[in-house]
Length: 86
Image: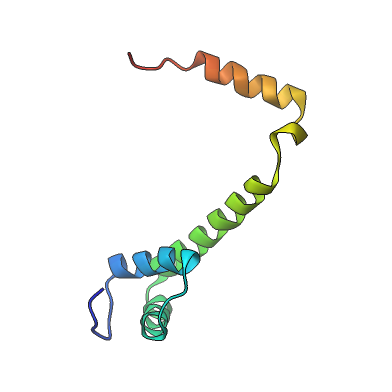
């Protein structure tokens, strides 16, 4: 990351993704916060990324054995219909 006070949208999206996996340095957190206050697109990306992360966590807590049998059969039939390239 470059160390100027303003960051690009590309840098902001990288920081948003990094924020979920690890803690950011104070300076990077502040630069991201300023960018998110000014950029509605990156703010929207941050919100969407947060929702995706929440859903992934929920999926990781659901066991396949808890899935109803009819849902398992529907998934299996869709997988069987996929034409994989040779």
